[in-house]
Image 1: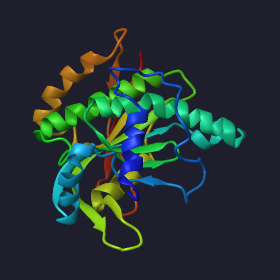
Image 2: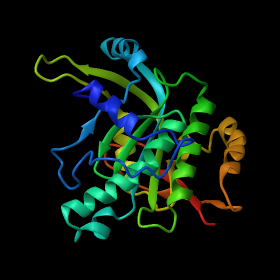
Image 3: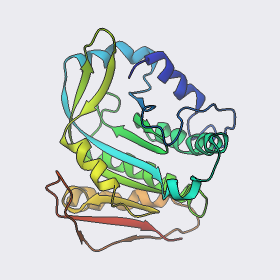
Image 4: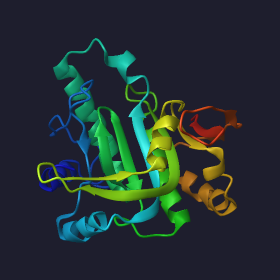
Length: 253
């Protein structure tokens, strides 16, 4: 994260979900299709900055829930758009997704074009494992149901595991981020994820009874009697990933 104050302004730019979901007074955060321009880091609350920095300096390891949220077939849909049109698309997309993440207690770790990685866990959110999953799922469900049947239809990869909070101590470039195999697995899962669905490795989510039992209550937040269908396990062989199956919870109103 190169600039704490800049990332704090990103959070100010996109108010919480309970305040607005349709803010148009936004500026371009990142140019799509340009891998050299990736916003990395966390949108810290000013009052908590020092506490969070210490967390990174100590390189603490914690279990967190991660979401990778992105627009389905983004390149195919918008490859003929001009840079200004892409900027407007991303502005509108962020104005929906970022407030929902904030409202559900998540923190943005990376913005990569249309892709956002959100973290649910310490030091930003201190709660039991089940509650972290439910908050992350509520976030995913709200985003998917909100964007269904729009040009911003999205898919979400959900993963849980240990990450290491890392500070690059280079004098020339100060960066705060997370590292670990869990993040790598999340990227791999996103590559096979289905649209309008929460995608997850079978053995990390619904297989855990305490989460599966409590999970049902979170589905009540959907509107218009929406229905969610759980897929059968699907075999996968992803580079650098030990998991051999994944499943998805698909939204079909």
